[in-house]
Figure 1 (spheres, helix red, strand yellow):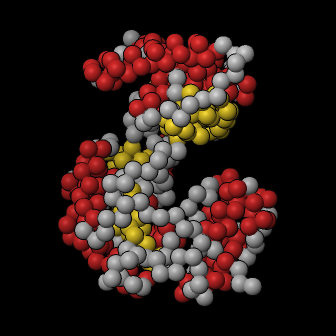
Figure 2 (cartoon, helix red, strand yellow):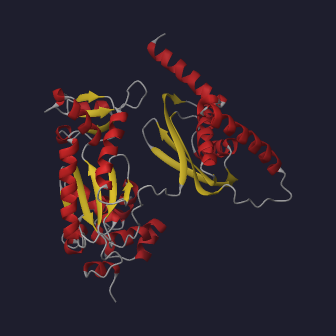
Figure 3 (cartoon, rainbow, N blue to C red):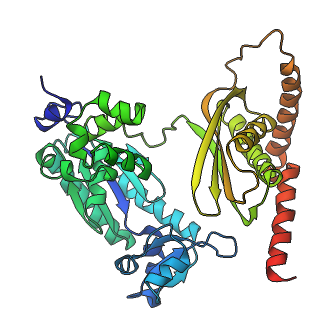
Length: 424
């Protein structure tokens, strides 16, 4: 009996006949900056966040900086150690959004099946186009798109071609910049199987390290195992990883204008000062919960799970989550977040930043089963009345027209920390 990978190699897989592209604008932020600033030509350039606001990390770098070993998300001081002549420029998000839209319009001229994956990446589905029936034909379209983007915007793009979204993304990462790569049944054994398992989309550092402990080092190692073994290592994600490695990912490319149902709603913040105790953290959680709850209600959702992320001063980030009664109320979400923090972290240790996410979403109007002996729903009804009133005020006068007191506290603490830092 043929396994998933054997069926893929023999062109009998679940994606047979599909043509999917993944387009990735090369060094996007830095490329846009260099386009408008000729004086940067030939110099190593990095687009970086504000040092004053503690976002002093590399957001993007050009090819010259990359050759020095400069990496995205590393601190500016680290980047400058590798490249003393590195030119630092601030981000200009309006220009990046504008260029992203221009490039997307080029994609839309080929298909309405365009799914964004961030501001600089997108999948395109060409399946069903009578002019594009094979991966080779898809390669021709991809090369045409590559040339058009370069000619019409001055930017370069790498395009991957495959029969599924996972391998298309793998292909666009394979050769950069300004390149087209095809990965499919024809070079699955010779190329795909030899790649490190960490190259696959959604395989993070911790999963990669865990897989290596079990001797799973390459994509071929994953496809040569089985879904039961992979599940024993990574749980449900392991089973998905096995299918991805075998070319059996069947996720569709969303149609232009098609809205995907939200899976979670979240916010995070890095303040100009460390959060020194549980009270500081609770204050921030209250402010974040206010935003998360408002977005939940605006989308018609309520959450059954609250998840927090905590980043230490050593830049180590961990996450914890807990189930809650179905809610879209800021007080309840913030209370759950604070409970998670107090029960799972050292409250006396400073924290650099925190994040809050509401997940496991349900339709807000779907109804909730109440316990007849529990009167907490009476308090919830009062909170819902307040929430609805606040939403009406914001709808009429703007989101910032009414603010939770925690946001004011954060502004005051931030001002005091900044004043102290500047000696005023």
